Length: 69
Image 1 (cartoon, rainbow, N blue to C red):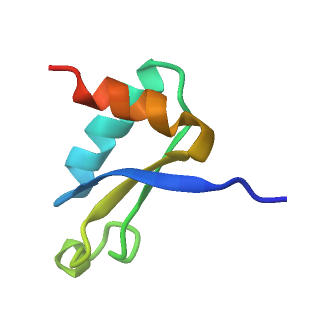
Image 2 (image 1 turned 30 degrees about the vertical axis):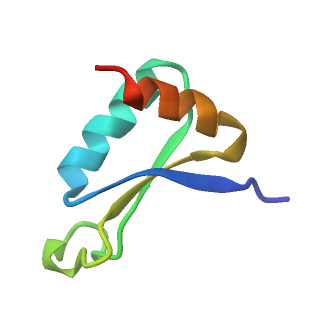
């Protein structure tokens, strides 16, 4: 049985996505990062951006965290 995930941020680099993921993890959320870039080996392939993913049930919390200044 799979878990539904949603993208809460789309950024231009894996580094930026990892920073966002770290912020969300520090608030207790489980987070994934997804990019079509050969596992980070070919960053020029990140044409669709890098997605920060959370469980659908955590979407509202994640968006509140990311909206904070």
